[in-house]
Image 1: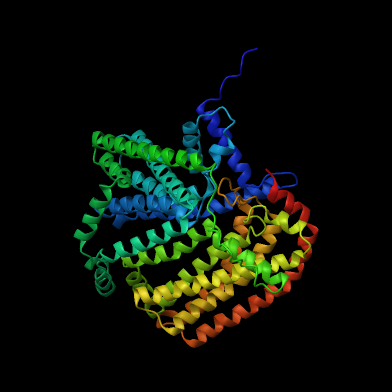
Image 2 (image 1 turned 60 degrees about the vertical axis):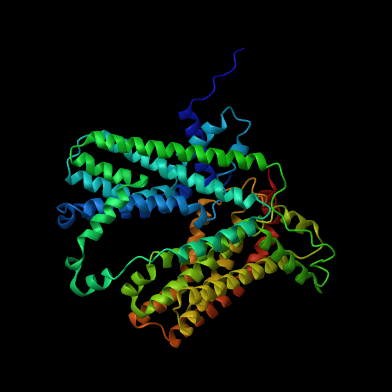
Length: 551
């Protein structure tokens, strides 16, 4: 009896993407596929509107008839799309795709083919449809008003550009998980953040004086040489090869466009090679013990705890402190703040928002820092510590105390994160009043109860397994992710409404009091729904245990 043939690459790609689709939709017994597909499509819906906006923009007469603006917009979108894709593993602390080599080690597929199939499959996820939508709309709009010498080459270049972004996104992802795998991951990330801060201090900020000129005399006062130089510079870096290639096709130079397509292919191949090397390095080390804290000798953190509840709080705090993903999340708001200053982003916000700019920026960074810490762990509160939930079920204690302790530690970590970000912003930028700080911290106090309340229920109804050693992490179901985003949006709404009412004149103490009042109402809401969450926990304890301990 002959052995069955090994599936081809396309078959592997279909199987892998189909499996990802089912995992993302949380398919299983009793799940509504229609609802899951609806959520999948809804999460991709913003991409349609973004694409339509840029398609229309490229067809506007002032843009379409210009010799500069179409190429500047295309090259800028190429650079932004590439940058978002590469930095996304850091911004989202995504460490869930690295496990595919170990998951499918027994399958008839080579590691390199699996990497390629996984990279291509990532281009068909909802986030990819949203990320590529602006550039897709702009490219179609440009092609609709300009004759292209070889339209087929434009399609190939678009595919190569997408592969370039996906490949270097994998490089960033695998670099992150290799750092998180190291025993001294905290020192490495802290040193990297300090080095980035020092290096950024030597780079001169971008000149934003043109904002004042545009504000006083309109777009006509803008020095077009600045836009021309920017378009040329963006077209000379690999991501800009696609935008420049479209321009070459419109000018009847397909040979030049073909050279740029070759450049896209070359740099995409380099990215895949680097990603493969980083991935294999990670899996060669996966047999070793993961990151862990140093032995504390005779120092026992539980020796001074007086009650069972304080012991639970101490345990949760230590687990969160030692969690490598928490370390990564803690660094993100500071990196964003450094980039904001490096790119003179505050000047743009001052131009748009006036005296409210610092409140918006400080509040946004504080909220982001609190949300990524609180939502990441509260929405998977029974599994982020590995087998911890099984230990709790076997111990003679009340599960209600466990959930309260987890909420308390997650909330305290988010508040501490927000305070540190606010202080960093005030010292690093040198702007921001006491009112701005009060509004930012009140906004965090308003969003946290909503996140914790939603996280409790999402952890009970959408439990997923998470291996703290980073060997494997199941994806959070798409439905749970969307519900978490809705909860975060509802919690952030008071801050947004209050600053909109304040206008460009800047917030006042009344603004801070308004946000603080909403925070008090949200705390009351959290305390009101907590008993219900505790009852559901008792009812679903076995279901949750099975979900978070399965292999």
